[in-house]
Length: 325
Image (cartoon, rainbow, N blue to C red; front, top):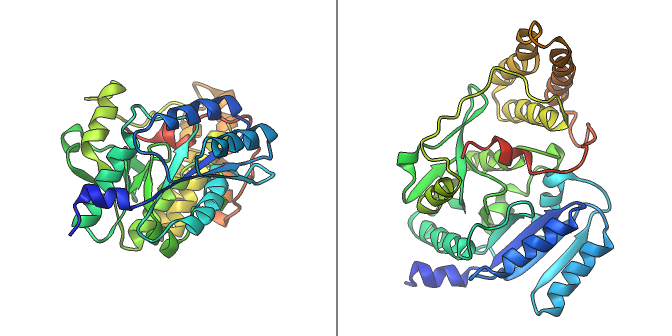
């Protein structure tokens, strides 16, 4: 029997990187990727546009002898849509035992051994758990009653940490066989919680997902997030398109997952109740949230999905902001 380390090198890494009008970030990310001590065997760059500069960047990778593909969607399909297309392309290259690695051009690796560390960890998990389907740096658990993410405690960050999903900007490795089984990301979510939906879908299919405890702890220490307490706020943030997609997709995930009561309760509390409670202290802001929340609740409940609210620029992936690291 081969050792986990040998098995790790026997498994190819097929990367999927979605970008949208961020050539500077893409340049920096590709430079960071080149510093990894474990190279990708193939990189698929999905351009949620058709930018000639991005195409040239991929062409430059080919000139350097790196195996890469460029896929232009021609329109903004959001992270979810771009990843769905990238996963389908990745399955053309990946064998069942290989990993499909999701990359975020806004979140470069914190050190040169992220890919090798996760490849070794993933190989070890597959040796010990035949239902292992995904590994990554940071994840969380999901409370189907409240519709909220639950932060994993500092004391659990050692060895393999079972989670319900892995953050999309946390270098998730998905086993190609599992991707073939359950399908790619749900493109209809467009933006936000696409990685959460995918982790929950894998879990429903009987697969297991794990965070690499020691690497996770180091990431948390580096970010100064050891010993913090994460709790939902009673106040109102900005009523923007990110908030809309967060609410809409949460309602949809709960309803499709068979938790209709929780979907209704979460929708009414967060989309309606929270703005109403805040009316006395911030009438204008509360009304903006109420209009946005009402639309999110309606659209999520009836399944009006896709790009239903136009995003105003692209920042970090919504789920990376919500992930309780």
